[in-house]
Image (tube, rainbow, N blue to C red; front, side, top):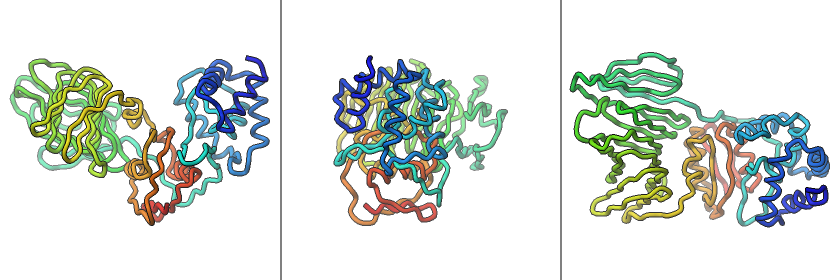
Length: 385
């Protein structure tokens, strides 16, 4: 691609005039030519003419850019410091490797993120951690416990390995008791059930389960959000209970979002098959479909954005078509915040992805730049739109 074409594509994108084909062409060229001197010169030129609203502060932006490059897992991870220095000033305009780190207010034009981040009241992102409630009611804080055997529960040995609780059942006995794993706000954790099924809990979630599956079925109960990879056992169907809804599987991968502050409970199938039941309503899902349940109806949604559903497990916030209240709720769970709204809640929707390892103030700087007005009072986020 010649220099004139490169200049044209970059400027089309920077001024929000690029077509879908031009954006695809630009990102493909970026993936293949991350060390190209022409592009570096172009970025340098754009950085030198960047408006004050997109000023470049290396102390803030270089860690953010490094995370973007690590997330991509493409050859751009190895690019030199000169690229990072110039790309930082315009990264939200041109993107890296096809992934732009940005939000769009759909009622406005696309804008780069301002870098004058205030660090007052800053909070770190969430991390691995949970509370394990044993059968006798005692509680174990899992945040800082190292690898090793934790307890014996009924016929199962409970151990920790690499931030995951693992149950191994002694099949010679019939003893089974119940445990509960819960994640407070700002925590997530992984669990391996006694049948080998894997469960990932998002923040503000819980799962109650037997320490051994001894009967004809495997039954667990959840609140909040969890992703499951179920070990196949055609002789023992696996059931997830969520309020008055039942999800039955034999062996599959699926996600359930059942937060109380959301208007619906969504079960999304990635692989295999599940049957979702509620009272007399039943639907059977195929991969890529979602069962959505509100107060009165259970319905199937086709062609679900699986990347968005699984963003939390993959270390991202994905705000594609999300409303302000949904965006703020996700942040509240991850940063352990109370939320207060002043005035009318904006009806705007957003687009974009943010890594979940940024501090609160880094994320709020992005929201502020798309004209979400807020203030932080202790651990309360006040939204004033």
